Length: 193
Image (cartoon, rainbow, N blue to C red; front, top):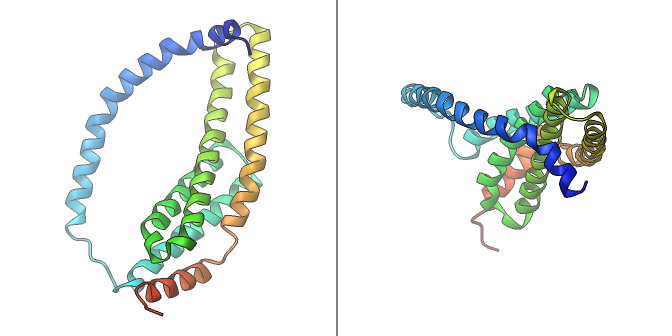
């Protein structure tokens, strides 16, 4: 897409983006502050059950199961909502894996990288779905709309084709097996030869 056509495509979105950013900031900060105060108040009563790996494995397994279920749903019905939910569950696991990476960095870092890559791909898939909706609502010439929609659809399909096999490989293991393997690494993390 040449520069002139790109500028014509972006023009209807520039002013909307500015208005949206200003409105979002004004609306979101007070509600975020309120939500964080609520978490602070509730967290005083939180108690961790278990010790060491026993305290971590239930959460790891639950997050893993949720990511697997979200993948299954997104494969069956690849709506923007299902894809977004899958991305959120992958990101949850990514955060956990990053925290646990020191148990065996050489083995964990590729896993963390794969989860990060999948999360980023799913984020782009979601962004393209949002873009396609906004394109349909934008005041664009029919030929520019068709060109942009075709490009967005092609990129969406390519990213989806990349996300599915990566997600299936990453999430292939049973939650209990993943937890058991990582738990063994946890137990051996400080062991000397």
